[in-house]
Image (cartoon, rainbow, N blue to C red):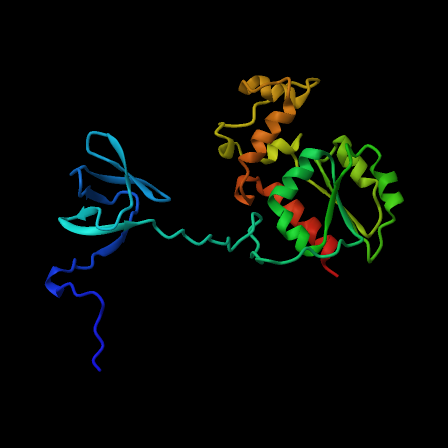
Length: 268
């Protein structure tokens, strides 16, 4: 026997299907019931917010056939969430390896002078260091560096790299670095008085790092000269660190030093 649909409504009386249109920001529609016309500025679960040409906002439910688009009835739907885009490069510029697990820590180490140095290295090279299994530690100064290197006892399977601030000929740091003689220890450094200076001024919105007179604490002098809080340099550093997004925000002199240290510790 012929099968009949339980719906006996004649085809000419059935409502025509309407298109479903994502409520993307900027889409201009008219609410069918009130005639309110405006651009979509926000779409949340079950509602859409429109803004008319006078800046007035109104919230409407996302009902079937509830809107007109260029005079035609449509059903607005919530836009599909965009899939997160994985970075193809790490902050240091290396090729990213999504989902890679951290390697078991090597016996070798990279030492830096202070906490700020360690935080900056982690911010830019952290992904690379975890894949290579390199641990970075800070020393709170390098005055006792020869004794520290001797205690570490670097060898072919446990190399040591040291990053030193203000490593320029004739400086105290230069003389200390020269006293480290182990063939398995590499001491390199940048010319800046403090690691802060390795951040490009342009990344911080300042014309340059100001000069600080001899005998005055450098960080305190910089903060005073730039109008930054001088009584909490730790908070100032955190604000600086937030402005560092990749290697492009750092001076080349620091980039070369860190890359050399990573190679020294990891290359067989």
